[in-house]
Structures are given as structure tokens and as C-alpha cells.
Length: 67
Image (cartoon, rainbow, N blue to C red; front, side, top):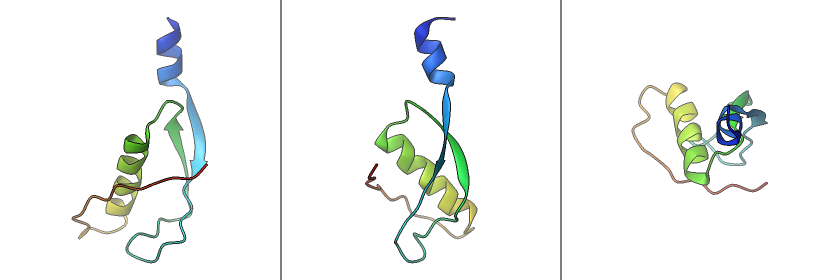
């Protein structure tokens, strides 16, 4: 397998923590995300988590992240 394939498959355990109030508060759960995820990809993951916790979630938010 080439170097790019190795990076694409590597994942890291992460926990998304927010100081936001509902409906933007995410559950305190650890998730595995690709090591090469972008801000847009991370926003997509958070939106997916929010939708999973609320069947009526019908918006998409662009989030900013701190590390």
C-alpha cells in the first residue's frame, strides 16, 4: 500500500466538546475520525451527530474549531 493509502485509513479518537446550547450541543461521545479530515469534513461529522440526536434537525451549520 502506498503512503497516501496509509494516511487515508488512519483514524484518531476524538471528542467534540461545545459550550453551545441546544440545538447545537453535541452528546459527550468519543468518535473515530480520519487523521486527514478538513474543517468542512469535521463540520459534516458534527452535523451528522446533531441530526442523529434530533429527527427534526433540518439545517446544516458551518462550524469553527479550536485545537
